[in-house]
Image (cartoon, rainbow, N blue to C red; front, side, top):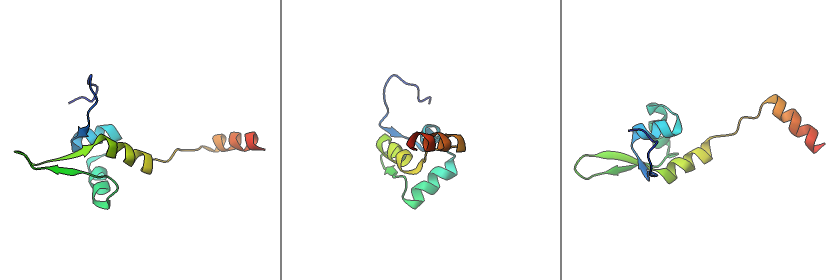
Length: 81
């Protein structure tokens, strides 16, 4: 299911979380095992694992560091000097 829908999803399957985070399945499960990414088991009819959008956004905020290149660092140094 493409994520480009007309509505905002509040929960994602593992496969959708992979697309949202641009990570592989193993990385998603590793983050869940470490406790870095919260996931919930849905026990209705078919057992499913869901991840709330807020938890995906928190994971991104907490784990993705901006990449600062040498050129960017030089520019920052010149501006603060």
